[in-house]
Image (cartoon, rainbow, N blue to C red; front, top):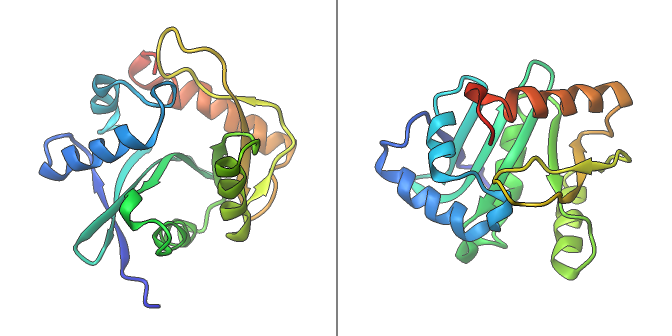
Length: 182
C-alpha cells in the first residue's frame, strides 16, 4: 500500500483544522491525560513541540503531538479517528515518524485489560520495546493523582542513562514550558 500519509504541523490554534483536531483529542483521552485548552494553545509555538495533523492525501485521519529533543522524539499524544481505526493509519504515521532517524519514546497504560493489552501489542509489532523503569505520568491538571505508565521505545530499549535524559526532559522541557505547569 502506498504511504500517502503525511504530517501537517500547526504552530497556532488559528487554523480551522485545529478545532477538528481538538475534538478528536478531547474524545480520545481521559481528562487526567490532557492539557487544558489554554495550556495547549500556549505550547503551540514552542520550537521543540510539534502538533502534527495526520493526513492520508487530503483526508484528516488523526493527531500526533510530540517533542523533538536532540537525541529522541517523545510522543505525548497519538490518536486516529475512531471511524478510521484498523486501516493501518496508526502504523503508517509511526513509520513516517521513525523515518526522522531518532529513537521514539512514548508512554502507555500498563497492559491490564483487553484494550491496553492490544495497544501494547500494536506498538510491539512496530518494533517498540518495553522499558523496565518505573514511570509516573506528568500531572496535566491540578487535582489529578499519580498514574503509573509503561515507557515504550523504538527501535530498542533505553539504557538507564537514556531513560534519565528522557525523564529530565519531561520534567524540565515538557512540564516547564513557559515556566508554567502543564
